[in-house]
Length: 287
Length: 302
Figure 1: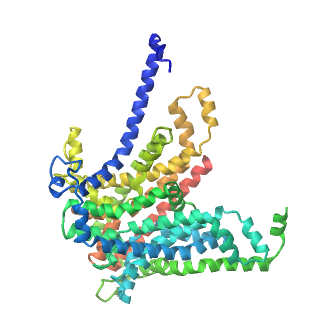
Figure 2: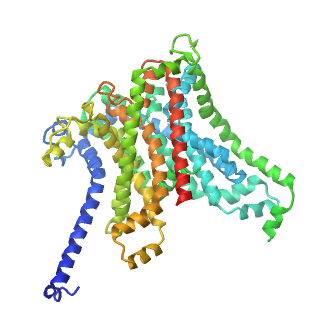
């Protein structure tokens, strides 16, 4: 910039000041909208790394000094976080796997047969509160003696995973060109061959998004585990709520456990940051 | 040419066979959806016609559960709480999400990283986040009252005050879901054409006029999509409310979902709870259809 020439021209100087002020105001607005996210996650981390005395002092201590991992050790050693982590992995993993096995072909069938009524059904299923499936399923599991088992949880989590996978896959297959599959059909291949060897390899990005979103929504679910699981079969969110808030009330371990629940999800989110919005808006409304 | 010739050629057997095999693809999913989604819907409607407590004999009562709800003060208040919560939890994120999208639409250093941080709350486990907010809301040791004091503001009782509990819960909801609105609107902004802006600038339009008369009408469909998603999600909100306030103090933050949960799994009153589910379902469906209708209208006129 020709800064040396500017001071002699007062008008240009004022314009420069105004431009700087505008820049500062913009930087401030960026700071303001990002700070709530930073504050909550920072506070979660801070609570989990402090001892109980520092967590309960007022005014609050922001930077742990010295930081301690005792809270994490405690939730794994005394509150069997490891077991609940494993339960969550099994339930969300199996529910996602089953949803993929039946949902990918279903999405393909819906896209190619133009079965839009089924799409509307899936859409309504996604709009219905998860809680409303819980009462009838609870009654059935009670009748079958399945309450407090991981099987019941996996079945219930299908309510979350299947509609997401079907919806995302149907949307994805619709964007794929039909010509290649038609060529395969005309060459004498079956519908199955053209699905398996033509459409499926092309659908890989859609499958990745569907898998991760289904897994995240299943992982984040709280109420199914809270109602259907027994002491040993709780999923992480239900366990964190029950064990740490009812059986003991200490902020450090609670924050540590909250961090253990949510970190895997945040890591997955970073992997598919861009695709998430497509998946979410697509699955939300597209009539 | 050849493609249209093939399409026009009558080969009913071929096509019918193809369609039938496509339904085979859907069949396994249909079985599962029938078992875990359709069957619960029907079973719920059936249960709602009974005076049914878990552990005792069910009596058929017809529509009595529904007429009971119409006279149930607590349930009617739960509906009001739900609408109050939903209105706030739709309007505020919509406005803030729009502002955030306009900010992130511009180029600035570290934009990608900052946008990543801004969107993180969206995917975070609601229960985990709700527990952290519970600790932040604490009137004596909570960090929020400390932050208020830094700005010279008086402390608040947050979720411990019947007046402030719903706005406080909405605060968590805003924090959680404004990023989704931002991302949807950002998608709309990315698709904007540049020509109208150039010609309007030549005509001497101000930045506000550009926004008001070009940007806003063009991204209106995206805002409506965001509003639909937000409305449905806010009506369904359960985890954060249940974890932070359990519907309290008293019943000050008891929404339909919380009422429903307590009826079913605290009082084991599954007949009554099923009637609530049916009413709730109708409300959600009606609102979703209304918003979709508005969206269609907006597209036709726009």
